[in-house]
Image (cartoon, rainbow, N blue to C red; front, side):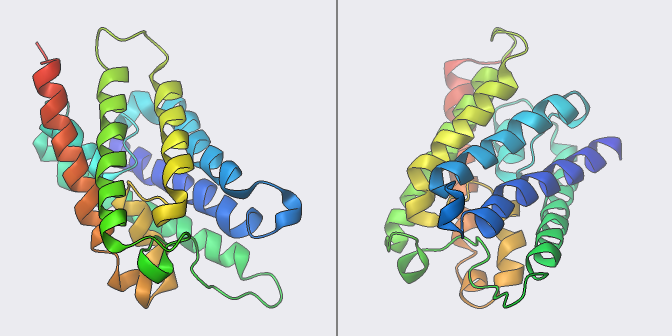
Length: 227
């Protein structure tokens, strides 16, 4: 239960910090954070939680990460479903807190609510195929970074920084394409509040990250098998 609580809190923070920067700050050009600021915010949520709860739960904060670590031989199968449930619930709570804050402004309209999308709901108008490729590839590399940075032979104490910077880079690349998911819990939490098209397109942001994570787990296990 301590591990699940840590994952719940950590995923809530990821959604509140990352999506919150998009909904509350990036919407106002005069604040100047833009896509770069949102990308950095997502990375910072992971860095801060890696050192806060990494020693408790491993700081997955993401169903795709948990699945990729399981495939890579780093995570016990019996904990997989409980972790995913805790992550999704934490994301929803983070989105609910964000909604309560954002709706406190006069004239508030929910709009996309930092949800992920493709075609007309892609920030740059990218197609479903472009979104699918992007989410698979970005999640693949995210898991390669995680599996490598947390390996027993990797430099000690730097995993959180490498993973957080990796997530920042992923957002810098893919925000224009899908608003960046690589995390089904993050996508689900925002889609539940945005509704409509966001829920209709949510399937891609489960299928693609999980596919990328599974592929990364298999590839990294082959390159650097655990002893």
